[in-house]
Image 1: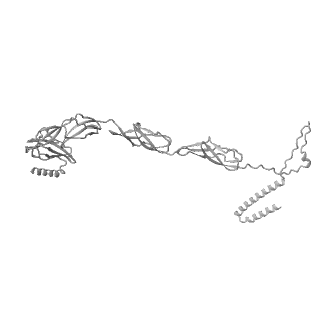
Image 2: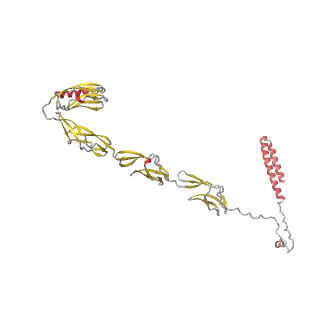
Image 3: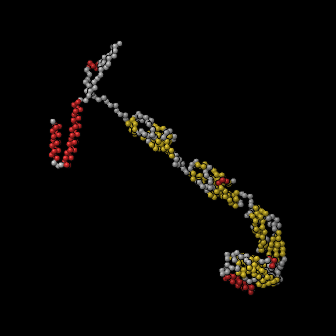
Length: 445
């Protein structure tokens, strides 16, 4: 009981010292007197996180061992086990470059049945090489049981193994558990032949929007391959994609194949713009008379194709009607392949034929109407037709017109002179009035 109180006191002391001494090694006293068969679990030291501890295993009392446990602030060093032989021991324990002596006095215990003090692998299994996914075969495994009285026993059953299914390739450590006592052996696990279980798109291609008729560009596509050995990624150069020509507008699914497995992603194919045609420049001639033929020279058309494609056309089209046969505004239809557009021209009546103006020529006499020219006698020489004189405008009418022009010019000149005189000298008003009266007297005469 006294030893239990001492252990409790040491534990409390450790709890109080750890926050203060977290950065330095702390050595605790040895457990002192113990008896054979007694379970020993004694804290020897607390070391820095990088600390190490070791001792000569040949000098360790039978049934006892050093164990370390890491925690956030450092490493705990324990003396554990069940001593199986009495005696006095001075253990030299090395702590990260320094040493300490742990004195043990093991007394004989009461006479009782021996207890299990440790286990170890006596012989490993016959099969120690496996393929990933295999199940462990313990055939041939034997375990050595070490008893508290120093005796030992070899067994081939009564223990458990972990793990029993070998999933991970490489060196695998197998745990052997016999009544809570542990020992270990190792096996080698080779990777299993790859079996592709599925694929999926990890990264989409760089280009996912296309014009109708464009080819798929899978650059940048990455597919993740799921296998029995884990996952791996493959690039576009190792993949088959279909379809490669994108013709259907809208969302289009692309199937990706790798080996026997497939997955898919979606691209967007833009709607194709409808082609159209319009008049870019009208013809040079837009006015006609009835019956004329259309002249399309100078006409230029503009063609709009799929998405931002524009062409200009100045030939190769047809126009109708060609002959303009009615008056008014007339629509002309222009056709090019399956496209058409309109423009308008103006059609007018042709100018009227002028009627002959009446002349002062005297009416012919009844005698002259019957035979204006003498008929030629057979064998006689032809007689030239008389020449009619050209009538001129009477001189009286031309003289009146000239007089009227002269009078108008004189009136205009006098008006300008009167304004000038009035502005320059108000006394010129009488002169201006007299000039006007004189002008009218002359015209009256």
